[in-house]
Length: 402
Ligand SMILES: *Cc1c(COP(=O)(O)O)cnc(C)c1O
Image (tube, rainbow, N blue to C red; front, top):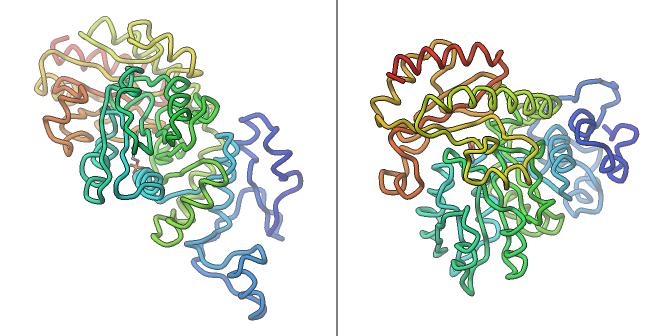
């Protein structure tokens, strides 16, 4: 098992993203396989006892146990790190494993976190419910308001945590401003980049410290496996994340890592086409509904910022209806092509009602605080012909009285 010719990091880091996505991090066994091998193994054997000792002592490279290293997982980690422009990456079992690990590996009792109030339901749950149990306090703010970040800083603030665009309110955070502010106060920025991915926005380029992913979404891209990743400096990964991960075990399964590795090969193609489709579908739907939220439409409150920091608008938009849950459910129930599903990043168009699905668990008060209304629907636009998606939405909007 060795890195393929030309896989030295000094070379691969110079490749353009589309090349990194197809070839970055590839290792080959003595069989010379073209497609990356799937190492479905938990353990490893050794030729002699001295080798085991040397590997455990860190004096010799090599695998010891799949909670610590696995060749397929290592290929995925290297590929994601290259795409993200990060020194290091560790794959995780799911997006939520990635978020939990990225936060808990660096926080201790007495620390304080400032987080975006609009977030994926489980991300918000970590701040509101999990961290306080360990003596870590949190302040949630309107993340699109630069002054709110500054005002929320306390002497014990250790981490800024947010998504951009946020799920499902599509709030866009000013990456350069927030990351620069954090740096000036010695605060670590953790960005959940699931909606944009490195193909549309690289938070490290704007000064972020840590990027955490649900790779379940765009990176897999075909709705098959749960996966996650945390990227950052070698110092952060080795001294903070790795000791936590090795001893608590939120590791990804090699099979899931292999699926995401193959998914990454087409990430750039898919996200660009799906973003084009999403823009076209959003332009069709916008005049028919009271409010539509998509960063690449001029009506988005942070349109200029989105143009500045994202290469395209992404695959997802949200819309709000005045008729509350009943009208939103009526629209969903009339869909014939688009599936009712709470997943995103899939090559299929999927629609959901966040208040009764992804954001049910945070409760009505937190939903109101975040801006997740009863009339809100979220659509992930897939790789289908956008005209078919438009025709389906046209009839579903009519069925819902729009
Ligand atoms: C889906 C999602 C997560 C959670 O990821 P899982 O892979 O489902 O655990 C976290 N953050 C955002 C923004 C998401 O969309």
